[in-house]
Amino acid sequence: MLLKLIEKNSLKHLLRQYAEGFGTPVFLLGPDGSLLLQFPEGVHLKEHAVKPVTLREKTVGYVAVPSGSVSPASLDFMGGNLASIAAMRYEIESLSGEVARNYDELSLMWRLSSRLGTGLDVSNICSVAADEVMRICPSKNVFVLLCREPSDMPASGCMSIPCDPQPGQASTPVFVPKVALGADTERISTMVFDPSRGLLGRVYEKMEPLTVCNVNEDEGFEGFPFPVTRIMIAPLTVEEVVIGAVVATDKQNGDEFFSTEIKLIHSIASECATSIRKAFLYEEITNILFSVTESFALAIDAKDPYTYGHSKRVSETAAAVAVEMGFASEVVNWIRLAGLLHDVGKIGTPEDILRKKGALSEEEMNRIKEHPITGAKMVEHISRLREVAQWICHHHERCDGKGYPSGLAEEDIPVPSKIISVADSYDALTSDRPYRKTLSMEEALGIMSQTVGTQYDPAVFECFKKVIRGWVSSPG
Image (cartoon, rainbow, N blue to C red):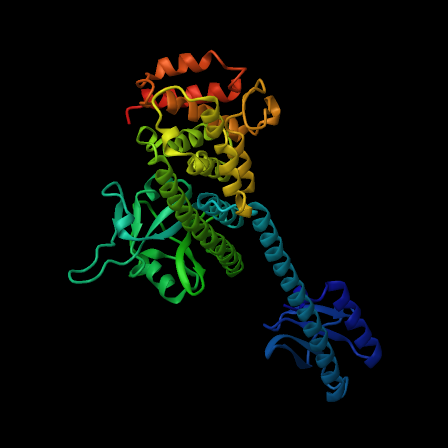
């Protein structure tokens, strides 16, 4: 222990100072009495007096001198001095270790924050959590479980670990895998856990990490469809509620899960749990927004029985095209919203114009052409939707600059507006209207292709065609 705390050369220097200061040979012994160092060399230790060197109430060695060569006080000084130096070195080591651990945790939190960013995608958050856990302690399997109500579960395809409620008892939430890394990802994807039982039940109840060195000796282990010996579980906890767990099984090097690793993994779980909760809340708010917007859009469409459901179909088509073009999921959602609201300005258009079966007069057409601006003005009052308002405003622009309301052309037209434009035209052509019957997909695409480059953006139109034909050829 002493040789680990104090460098050998430093100990030799201390023994020399003791020997020269008190005029006697000095020996350093280990806790078992074995000789470690001495000064001067070549002197045999026969009859001797010893003084224990203690550290945190534990004997870590002895200082020895020939019997009668120094006073007891001198020997006490040597033992006490060595103990003080050892204690000082121990504190330095402890502080250094704590600094290193804090640095590791801060580095981890910085890396996590960078990877999570401001994104609110649950799958991405869980993937980051699993990846970081695998980085800290490479394991055979790492997976993230999230809490779900049994009513949200698919009717089949998942293996129960057991989660069926007892007769007369209300069903409890279950934990299902969201992301898995490692050798048994396919098997993990079929698992369902009851958080009221087994090892997960302990974590769920105590809201603290748990590690077991040999699950075969633990009666609470649920049993997995693949071999497991060691396991570590850290809860995903937000505001004293467990919303999931991070699980790692069997480190690749065969070691147990160490306390430093468990602490870091617990930090990962805490950080990601907060992000997951935010993502769930964002998803809930978004769903409410879309539900209200869809109801509003249907109410507008209902002014004209020939266009009922038009806004929803345009919204779904525009979102699919945006996905095909590689837009981020958040932008796709805003394009979907813009599709729902693209005709909201028609709330100010008289119904006799909307329902007119014959050709519109110039004055009536001018009234129709007001709806993009009217809709944009209605939406732009919501600060978060100001960009969406611009997309709505320009969804009747043309690439050749002959559209309305602003006569924008080419790159000046927002891409989401171009997407809504093709979706809007296609739905109009393939729906019954007062002035003509429904066209087939190929008939509609044939008509639209004649104005690609003048009315429609070529790149957008190509992605649009791929989406539409994919829908038609898809079995569903």
